[in-house]
Length: 219
Image (cartoon, rainbow, N blue to C red; front, side, top):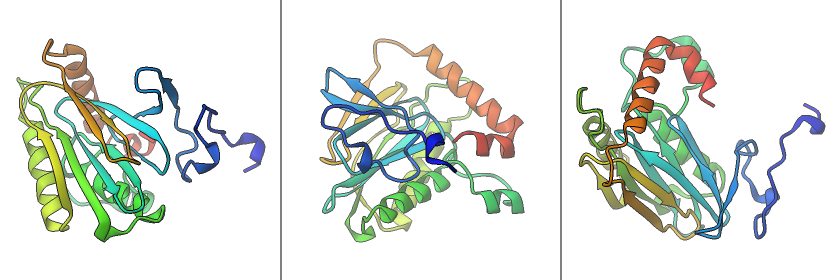
């Protein structure tokens, strides 16, 4: 591909576009005046890894996000997944193309692999998990399934769990600073965010209606 068609990261004060990791050049960034930092927002099925002073932000309902960081080398990232694991066998197409980070097992593997590729070491990884609220009261408790999955994954992979804020019935806003490892969490107790619940229902329907095509397009 010609360099003329490569999306270039937007320039901000204190932010070095040359330090953006390969594969994340397309990600949209904006300046958060309250935190005075460049911010990246991720949605369900997405993940992001950084090696510089940025904030990764997301809003969680029944979804779960894991913030994973190599504390020694200050490389970290966050994912956002809606379902713990795919059901049924993986077909040859999805095995070849790879699956979006919509499922917890893939979301964790892709995030960790991206951190290792950036120079992180598995033995130095720390994990913080958030979300899994029961915001879809009329449906199966997807949040609890997500929590059980990520806890099991961390134990099986012998990763270090440093913090967790999971469960309950409230949506959460999560802000992760990958260089410092700091996480800010705000439970949205002032409202049961109906728009968030509706978004999650639409996302679930999308996964059910278009499982293969949706996986590719989520990027």
